[in-house]
Image 1 (cartoon, rainbow, N blue to C red):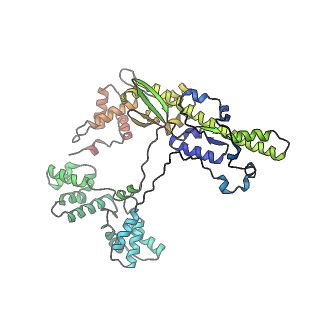
Image 2 (image 1 turned 30 degrees about the vertical axis):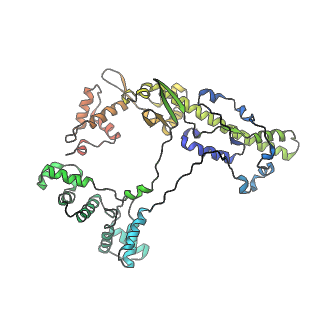
Image 3 (image 1 turned 180 degrees about the vertical axis):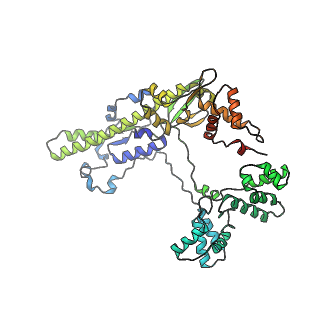
Length: 471
């Protein structure tokens, strides 16, 4: 079960760990290609003991007595080198970049501040979150400085130092809320581009921020006494601003996360073919040296040391065979489960049309492959499949069912797709409400309640109609 939960990208590391811990387990050498078919999973594990080449004892890199007295083993004797000159070498690059905090501290050092102000500035910078905001009240910071650094200060002095920090790059850093963050950026733009007019944008953020966030544009037009074109130009300037200035630097140090598919589905002239991604699953076998060692020590069982040796070697071999069998069971379970899912959703994997997705729950697949629902859940929650239409998490293909007006079972994912398409095609100046979406779906034959439409819309991370409005 533990091996089943591990995605392919992490399986290679798990196998390396097992090889390092168990010297009786090794990667099978050779360039023979293996195909991931069900027949491969039925191979007798006894074949692991068959030597492909004659074993030479002079090549043995360990002394068995060292393994018997494994409580006092020197560290160099446990070192494992499972690579060869022909192996591909993959190295993880390390990026060197200046952190967000270091960047601000560097700018603080350029300012003409006395020692006291510099310490206060460092403390304020240390309290900024990743987005660049100061979420801690100034009064609380004054108390912190008194107790932590024995510096007695007040709100006025803290605000003066904070104003210095708010002049740093990236623009908007040091703000205490979104409104202040946007205003800092707008005032900076006005200074840098005096020929351009930012007065209206500043007024909207300063005086009509609540109406702006709720997209009550009619109220802004009336109270500010401006035209719709003027409002549109001002909103365009505001929307160019960065609501999270700190992220512009912190994103630079983040590494990209790549998805390694566990399954690959091919469309071969209208016929779907499934294969397991075996890139991270090397062929394993029991060490030939340990198999011969067991036979050698078994010939003389009278000696106590030989008896201990047999027990030790047998334990390592049994552990290796168990791990090999567990890997094969993992591959077998993955293949059976994905094959059942592929056949169940055959039309979708053939066309890529989400409306072709059939209602499917864990129980449906569990009954087909005759496995427990929890096993199917482990596979679905952590595995990815590569299709001609993209790479997807398996659990995204599972959905509840409901009936349309014709009495047919349809997937909730199909309804969400239609819902999403309706919103994409709406007039953004007059976006459709949940009530209107309910009516549209009923006209298409999907008789669902308005609260269900709202639930599906929220699951799609689509805001309400008022917040989707554009001028």
